[in-house]
Length: 126
Image 1: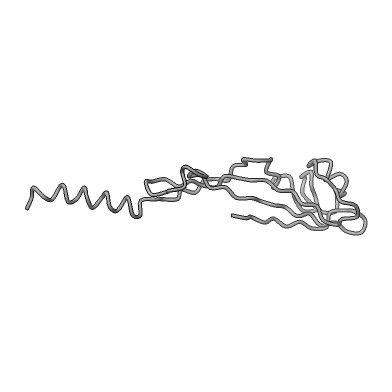
Image 2: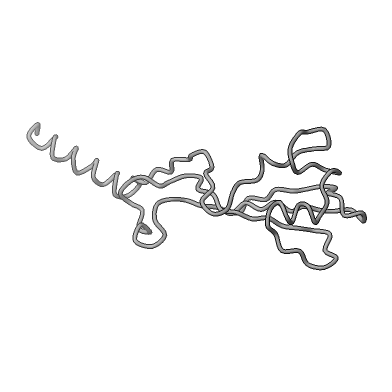
């Protein structure tokens, strides 16, 4: 019986790795397409370049190199970030999109009637 223990253990380990051997390892978000501007945005009392009530729609569009639609009260800035990776033997998509996981992050800036920033919302899309 003891001579079968090691081969059986190796077979069991192989099956476990094959069936469920993928592990997702999260990481700190790293921009992969476009800069992450979350650190540039703040409230009225912050020292950040994009502040509620302090920046106009035209200034923001120039700062972030955004295209403005006429008379729009909303500007959107979007970028992609890597937020983790699959590690293991079971991930079949390596030949396609790879083991890295990316998501889009979008900031929607809303402006008042005087073209001053009044609010912003951040959305993550996995």
